[in-house]
Amino acid sequence: MIKRMPILKGKSQKTVSKNISKLMTEKPSAKRSKAIKTIAKKKGISPKKAKQKQAIAIALSEARKSGAKIPKYKKGGKVKKTGMAMVHKGERVLTKKQAKKFDSKRYEMARRKHFGMEES
Image (cartoon, rainbow, N blue to C red; front, side):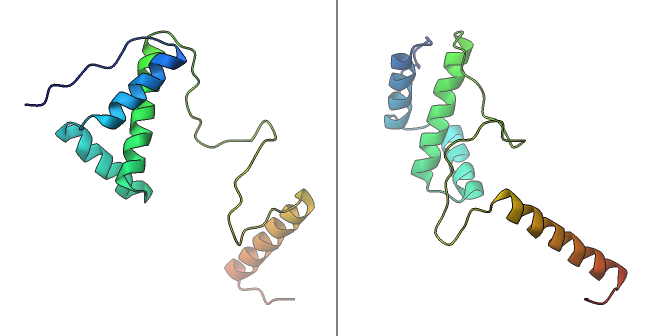
């Protein structure tokens, strides 16, 4: 039987960092190990990266329970503030004008295809 050290209670950055380190170094339970494999498979990442993401989530969750004001991750929606973006090799960033033109062309093509209209 493996004896696990409980994660620390607290909301300071130091406590959160210690909890992440602890969760990364100790051997996960069978239930957590299965969850890590599932996350890795669903997101297409390595189990090590999935374990890291889960450790961060657990540590931040514990800090929130202790009263830390850490915002939750947002899932989609309108971008409110301009910031850094990750652009991958082969991708390009469109200007607002290009994006509008692209969207209207795609809409027009879909409409013509749906109603059986010929290309002009």
